[in-house]
Image (cartoon, rainbow over all chains, first blue to last red; front, side):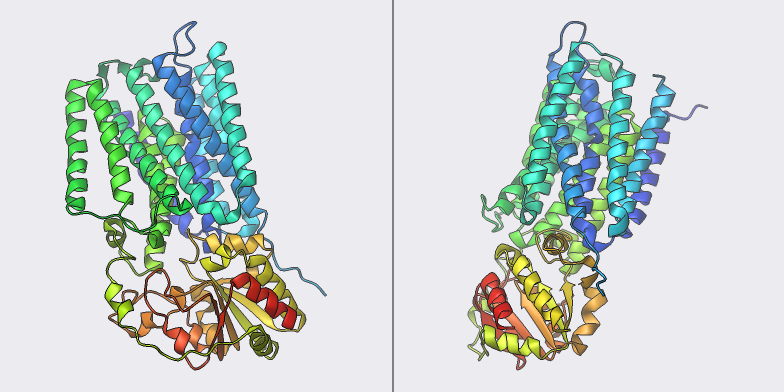
Length: 102
Length: 464
């Protein structure tokens, strides 16, 4: 009997929750704010769905009722991707070690 | 591009996202981690373009909209002050939520573009996943907007409660489940719109009763929701990168909420059910007696610190409000020139979001290896000469250890009172967020410095 592909995706999902659990516990508390901004940025990978939606218009019709939602989602996700990664970068560049002088 | 190759590449980008989070285990590897995240995102977007393979005029518009959103994001990222990080993150969460709703709507209107069937005849599993993605996305959106307004001060941080609130929320949640079931049997678009509308309403209703002091929990919780919304959409689109990311973000937010709750010794449900911070302590603040406090000026403080050999700084959100972090760093530099050992002690819920205080100190060029978490430094207070409390309050209150009647009893606190002397910078004797009096004010070895945090620190530096 064939296994429904849904089961495979569910397996990935469950295992990823565990991976996430252990990886996030190992994040040092001083980096919890960058953790939130970077998770924000990566969750915007939802842009993948937005792009498919935006390009769903049939020939010659760029803006159909469904693709408009895709375009709107692209803007929102893009704000998040660029904003999220750049602000994380900005924060992380401020973390400096003590200068060993003398 | 073949479906198998793109599936593998999505998996690669998912793995890169895991490495991005893994990098955050130490500041040295964190920048590399962020780079992994960016590469993962570039791969995911490129693969999507290639697998759709539609480079018609629509493609140009996609790039244009991408550029518009990207420039807005980049502009915000460079301009935002570090004190406003909680607002920024709340705002960003709302965008993820809304994007999830839009993608779900688009998939509902035009399922064939996503290989999910035809309108009115969408595959059952996809429909359920879509409904979940849209509902969680909508809750994330409206919840984050309320959190943003509260953090920004546009909306009062005071909890808004009314009779039957929890009952109403529970009924609405049940209604969502019923609607989803009906939606599956009828495929009616009206039901889909009602479902989304009710989800927006729930997001709004679950955040309004939560008080300003609980914002760290709320932000982490919404972080988690945005992840689950992404995962829901990931199932709809059968996209591994989205499923992995959604699970990562969902568990990350959940862990952060747990850590924040623990930092306040509150159960998660207690926070969610709300109403904390304004209602239950009014009786206590009324019967507080007048007790003597010792107060001093910058000169006294400078004298104490000059004669100390080790000083522990306890910063809180008040320091950020007064913009005193740079002045504080200058004071510490002067202390270090006099061979005084200085370290910083950070409580888990200092600031408005997890790790907020660390970012603010890092911005003021405080080396991160001088900054310690509660468990790391709490034993050192007994051996330190001076504790300098600036902008913190409840997290130093010894009542949490001694008085079982206190609302903050059991909350982990910094053992500031064990120091030989305590310098407490504060504007007045007013209680903190929890609305309770701090016993530390009245201790023998406490010297209150009544002033604006920034001005006081500058004055101390002058006197050193």
